[in-house]
Length: 232
Image 1 (tube, rainbow, N blue to C red):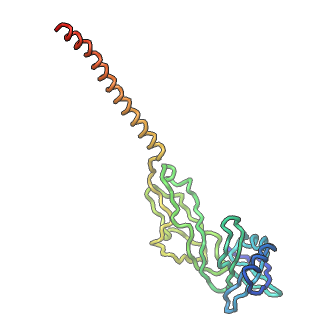
Image 2: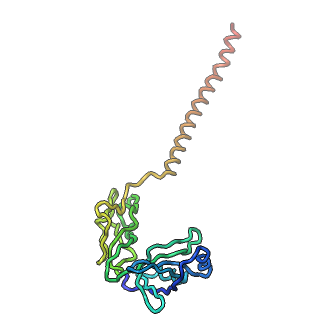
């Protein structure tokens, strides 16, 4: 649970152009905007390294410190460079620690190696990897654990079988959301292709033997025909 908040210092900035934003990034800063709480959006800049550490820390709530005040907030959105992986922009949302909010939380699957269906060669597929929840900001978990250790072949695990932590409400349809399935083993494609090639080779060898026998028979008949012609 996010029982503690992570502190992150930010500096207010003026809304800027793309050129100014690129200049910030060259200085190791990430531009961002703080929304919500009945207040105007607040553009800010934050140290890229400090931001990375804050987002990697345990807990969903970040205590944004600006000037002499602090504001609890949660990450609303982030833009990441597709190649370098660096954060290009972040949006935070002000939150009231006494009021529940909606969030998206990852599912963490446990016990897959012990599942009887997996031991029998079945294929375990994780259909849903994230779920929507409602909880107080400080009760939002990093992930919700799902035990799949009892799954048999042909089993389907629904969200209704997942127990969320105390204070967390799952908002997706529990009877319609498929979390995981365990299907019967399938024939290995490579092995199937190899078996087909072997069968083709055996058929080819058989046809070769038949053609060889026919050729020998025709060769054996040739002298007899020649003898009959000489006798005549």
